[in-house]
Each structure stands twice: as structure tokens, then as C-alpha cells.
Length: 411
Ligand SMILES: Cc1cc2nc3c(=O)[nH]c(=O)nc-3n(C[C@H](O)[C@H](O)[C@H](O)COP(=O)(O)OP(=O)(O)OC[C@H]3O[C@@H](n4cnc5c(N)ncnc54)[C@H](O)[C@@H]3O)c2cc1C
Image 1 (cartoon, rainbow, N blue to C red):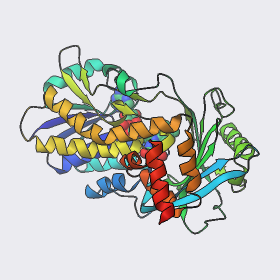
Image 2 (cartoon, helix red, strand yellow):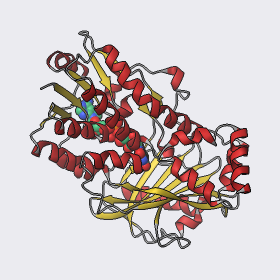
Image 3 (cartoon, rainbow, N blue to C red):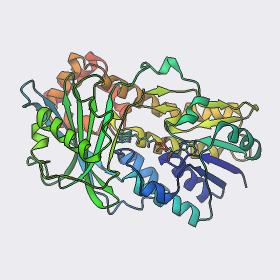
Image 4 (spheres, rainbow, N blue to C red):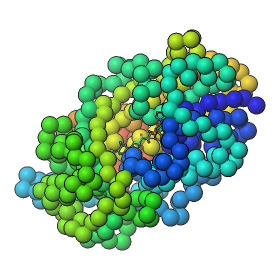
């Protein structure tokens, strides 16, 4: 059977490894950490995944935590007014529920399942020189190592990467003890709180190593008041700062957070990165070729919560391209075609996410405001997180937005 090496055991690498394994491929997975190290380590994401991405996991039978993870049935948007009241406040209903399973739980569990099913797991932080050797001994080498150092093998695609610098400073805290939003205590939702010119606070439930928890996630405009977490090493200090900023900028979220405690010592994360699209094929010094997967080739800012969704969609798309290719060689042409097929979906995510990082134009402000009066608009916006290609129909072009709002108001 064909031999495939996957470097990097995150959402995309593990999903592909388990998928290929189930189809009889001989898969080797290389990870720079063991399952136990991942489980006992630091949180990596907020990893909220919507229906289509979750369905790819169900299709492979690897939705191991679906019954335990909270069902996220809505997506809400609140906009802070200058006096810190809410100028806009609505929640759209998702057609299919979303879920967040802490990547520490998921990646550790998937890695163990891969080994139990006979997969070969190598614990090793791969370097470019290792890949040179492996590209000669495997039929295909896939690099799914996220935003780590191996991306240096893949050239930046400037035509698809409008930003050269990080657009947000990220600060995440996993907590127990968050109260419900009093307006909708009956169902869970992702809450997107926009503070114009300052940044965004995302609040969502998750399933972590200690069961159900909630995530408080600040995205701060660099240099602004939320860009305050760099150098904060103590998790307790990180949480106090998170809460202090919530009290100041989003008091309605702070009101339900007064009794929270961190889930564990690894429950905080801070950082930043520039959103980047890369050329999908890495050329090794010895002439071999490797194909980049998910964040390696398309890394978007988490402002739209799409990276894990995209990793799942990329893994599903690559799995189809690999199996459909049969015994033919995985050459450069196949690699480019495989990425191009994924880009058909990924381009919409990148376009929308990069738009959300900028200052919103007037027609987008009108759209977000109108969703407070028109429930179908709120619902459609919310479901765009599952399928961002729909934003082409009503988000970017003022005329299309106007026509859409007129059609909903008329109805
Ligand atoms: C703060 C934050 C919040 C986010 N929130 C969301 C969200 O709500 N929804 C969403 O969909 N996405 C979200 N994302 C994005 C999402 O987490 C990532 O896009 C997704 O995990 C990417 O998957 P991946 O498989 O490409 O890489 P990763 O999940 O990053 O996995 C890469 C793996 O490769 C390993 N590795 C790295 N280098 C090497 C090496 N040299 N050798 C071997 N192994 C290596 C790493 O340790 C890691 O385990 C968020 C990201 C951040 C930072």
C-alpha cells in the first residue's frame, strides 16, 4: 500500500492520518509532542467548529466528544457604544450546532486512537533536513505543522496576503464559573462583542480536560488598550487583566464573569501572527517536494473562528484528492491541483476574515445593525460562519447588501 508521511499532529494532520489509515494507507505521523505532553500542556486555540467541519469528523467516525461537548446553537453580535452600553445586540440561530473541543483533549485522544489502530507515531520535531531524506522514502510527505518553523519552506503568496504584520494581539483564558447571558439562558451561543477601534471579545463554551468550561478571548488592535498581555507570564495575572478589560469595555459580559476561575495552569494563551497564504509546494534542498496542509498554507486571523474549520475542510479535500489519485505519482502537478481544489473553499474564508480585520464600511455597519431588527438577517450572518462563501451574496458589495436588506424588510 502507498506510504504517506504526515508531519504535525494537529486538527488537519490527525484528521488526515485517521482518514487515510481507515482507507488502508500506510501512514506515519510525526509529532513534536506526545499525547500526554499535549494533554498536560497549554491551550492552543478556542477551536469553535461549525456544522460542515464537524460533519467531516462524523464522516470518519472520529467525533469522540460530540455527546460531551456543549452544543452551540447560536452566534451573537454585540457592538459597544462609546459609553460602554450596547449599540447593537442580537443572536442568530445556527442551522446546525457548533462545538468546541479543547485541542488538548482532541489531539491527544486522536493520537492515541491512531496508534491503537496500528498507525506509526514518531515523536520528533522534524527539521527540513529530515524531510529531504523522508521525501525519498515515502510516496507523499504532507506538512501539517501549523504556524511553526517549517513554514519557511513555503514561499509567501503576496497576491493573496494583504497584511505583512499581525492585525490583532490575542489573549485567551479558559474558565469555570461563567454565568449565562440573562437574555438567552436557554441555549449556548458564541458571543462576538465588537469594541470599535479597540478590538473584539469572543465568549464561548468548550469541552476541556476538566469538563465543560467557557473561553474568554480578547483580540486587540495592536498598540491599543487590549494589546496588554505581552510579557504577562502568570496565568492569574492574565485572567485579572482579561476581567479588568471586560469590566471597562464589555460590562455586560463582565457581569456574568465575576465568579470565574481558570480551568488549570495551562488555561491561558497570548500571542499574535500575520495572516498569510503560502505557495503550497515546499522544495527541499535535495530536490524532493512536500505539500503543505491547512495553517501551513492558509493561516487566517482567528477573528472569524475559521482555522480549525478550514483545517477540517482541507483534510477532507486532500483525503479525497489522495484517494481519487489511486496509484499514480504524487507529482508537482497533482500537488498544485490538490491545493487549488481546497482553495476553492479557502479563498472565501481568507477574503471574509481579512475584511473583518479592517474598519467596517458603512454598508456592513448597516447590515450588522439591521440584524438586530430582522431575525432572518441575524440567522444568515450566523450561518455564514459555517459557509463563508455565502458572504459573497450580501456582505462585500454595498448594492448587494442594500438589495438583500430590502428583500428581507419587504418580506
Ligand atoms: C487564539 C486562537 C483562537 C482560535 N480560535 C479558533 C476558533 O474558534 N475556531 C477555529 O476554527 N479556529 C480557531 N483558531 C485557529 C485554529 O486553532 C488553527 O487554525 C488550527 O488548529 C490549525 O490546524 P492545523 O492542523 O493547520 O495546525 P495545528 O493545529 O497548529 O497543528 C500543528 C501541529 O504540528 C506540530 N508541529 C509543529 N512543528 C512541528 C515539527 N517541526 N515537527 C513535528 N510537529 C510539529 C504542533 O505542535 C501541532 O501539534 C484559533 C487560533 C488561535 C491562535
